[in-house]
Length: 301
Image (cartoon, rainbow, N blue to C red; front, top):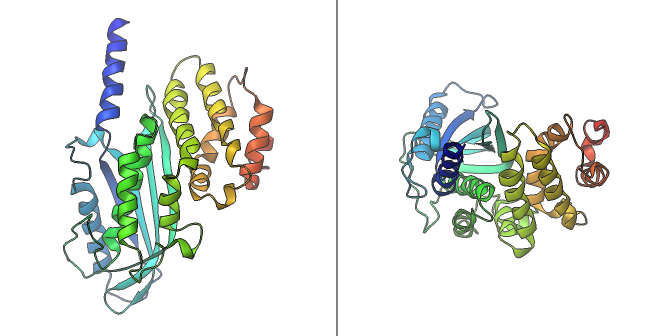
């Protein structure tokens, strides 16, 4: 038993200190674009995969099994000339849950306002001090650091602060550069809206929920008795009541709900929910995610 706890402690320290790099899969889908020159999309896919996986984002050198698994999917629906593209980018990331084979979603985000310039086989080089001029590596790098930030927050209270600040710096560099999706003036779901809100003191409740939900809640569901872990998850989620009056304009809260709704339903849809205030939890989630009332919350027993 003593050996087990020693191994667990080493595992936790290792994850807290060295979980900050990526193992990314990249797909580029250009099926909506007519034409025979598909090689440029294959080249872009490979270039981006190499760029994300081979860039040292945090200064740490890790083996593959230690890295954050994530997916970057680019859907191109418009091409103007040979080098200008428009479409959307979907970013998904997961992290392992301790003592299980389950991987919990950290982030599931669809950015539908993604335009960029790209010339086949050009070098993709990240410079955090200035805008690239083409928007491709700026958007991708912004979301790399966003993924790192979410991962860090899931292991330590506000542990992703450094990486969120890096993402904000990229956002600030990208303002007024004639590429859409960055400006706060464009609406509540821009990149600037995401990162600026994430770093506001008002978002500390959400970020602390994110940590408690994962580290004290999910990471204890691998035990034979899941009661404590489920209770902690429920109690953490009830803290989101602080946002029930403005959640529709709060992009980080929307992202949390989009990412976690199915998992939250599954956690409490089976097993023992004794000691959990299911009535309050159901009422809150009905408010925060009304589209799921019939498919999820009303199905809880």
